[in-house]
Length: 280
Ligand code: ARG
Image (cartoon, rainbow, N blue to C red; front, side):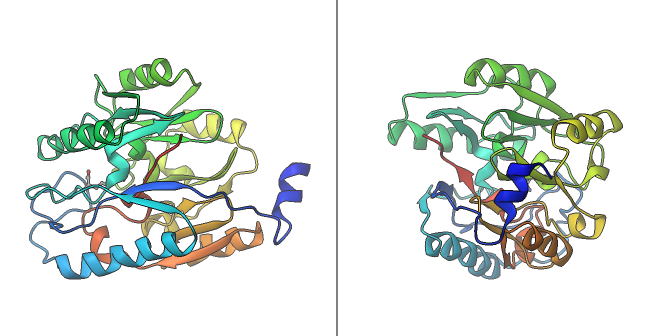
């Protein structure tokens, strides 16, 4: 670790910053189609259980003092609970998603309407396939951008131009980790954790060089979606089953908070997928 990072890691020194998130209650949650390796429509799902587990995360974020806003769920859009995919919002500008699969395409207009009604000044839909914070993660300086399964490389250029921020392209290679936020999480400004096996050798090189102090996850933690985590700089909400990575986070001075989102995992999503950060 660098000097500043080890200083920051001294227990109790990690500072939370209050965030604003957009979430969507999983009123119509179900697995009725399969667009990723986790989804099996033949396996029964319970909307009730999904709602209760989602509420656990919602309550945790509210209790931590964050400002959680809600977007109205739309019948017939069972994946809308994964609000991370709705847009990328940085510097008060919102670039709304363009989904790869037809089953999710109608979510975009709901997000466009939400941002317009909420009076965000710069709002438009992406021109190229772009699944929002599923594939684009802001480190506080640059934007890490995933491709390989969902968002297309041209979307990375579009994001660079729209936000005027540097973009680092990363290629995902393991179908279990089809969005960047299933394999990598930003913990604090410039600090990340990730599962190297989800990335191409070239992208692993890029990550190792840019983030030499990153927390590296083992496959067992990645496989229970342990990287699909949400950090406020101190508290890291992540799937409860990811015990290995929780221990590593504790060593670094973070406060891991376990959540049970097993029902939503049947659709290939967990904590981070359910939250979209709204950055002024
Ligand atoms: N079923 C959804 C899909 O495949 C899950 C999305 C999960 N969201 C995320 N940010 N990784 O599109």
